[in-house]
Length: 100
Image 1 (cartoon, helix red, strand yellow):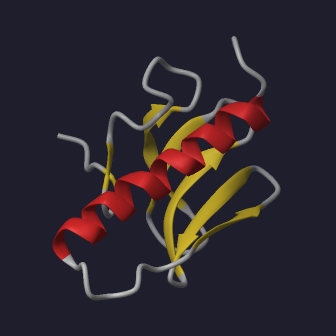
Image 2: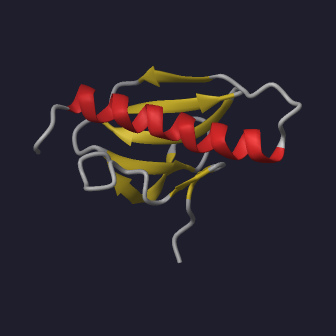
């Protein structure tokens, strides 16, 4: 791993907020955007927007996981915060992309 986890996660978190804010200002300019936050859990970090789980980031591997529910991620990783796109390659305005 070329970066430490905290630096890579901070960059990923800012990227997630930027993707959502860009989409929001383009399509919903008159509505105030929702706030983002994150919660550090035992094995993962949960990213939350407007009280809903946006995605999870695994603390050991840096994998970006789509949320299956509030408490659990979906099975397969959608990216990694240590890759060349900082895990943002599969992120859209509403969260990680579905697997095809």
